[in-house]
Length: 342
Image 1 (cartoon, rainbow, N blue to C red):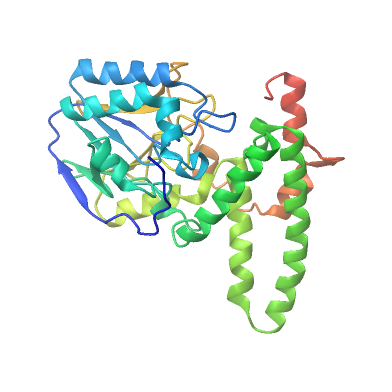
Image 2 (tube, rainbow, N blue to C red):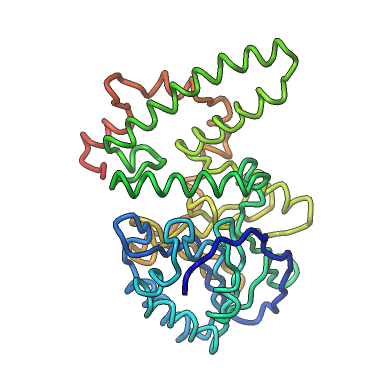
């Protein structure tokens, strides 16, 4: 089956479930075509183990968006060839325990989930009256308002990574390679030019146009240091304003389980690269763990953000602190000295 880009956004609909069974959540699996640029990294056996545990426990499975990386794979046939047994297991689980799919920003072809894999598909899932589950791109201040632009950028990004046979990603310390180091340097040179342009725009009275590019760059570099895609605070604010006690999201790929000002925020992490996170909800308790390592996540990754330690940060400040010359960066060099850089 050839894959054709869909230009129609997913329907906005909600599903409500009774709080009567355990629920397991995974998100941002990003199944690709099995090539070197497939960021799922061939963890099929591990996810099959998790699905078997879900089935055995009688739980429901909720996939919180971005299960298939349409932008990387280009063709559905290649995804099936690379991950056929896993897709069959998901479809079988949908027929027994039930699988609910919450749409994400990479989900161009909803028919794959609804008609082929037989998932129940929605844009927001409620468990009982006070637990809301949605992918989270709706809270992203850049991607949320500009899905079409994000899709174009993502397709170009995947193409570049595929041609260079290397990953160009944040956080920089996790991908400290020549391509990524040069890419960050090039981004800063572009930023310098954009800053000069913005000075001119402000003199001409185009303040909002200048501010928009600055917001995008700040959003981008804050993802480097622990505020990925800037969605955590907007998600907490939305929950508080709607009387939601717990909001569960994916999208940012940063796992966590925290309570802030009376609202619980859980992020299901991802199954990209070396990560394999999931959330389990049972008996009123929330647990976020990594399936492979067994590590449990609470608020440790989010504490600098919630404490305000990142509020002052922009690209210039980050650059002055990090850049050591000759495409070297403080964080990456330290990780390399410690032997923890990829």
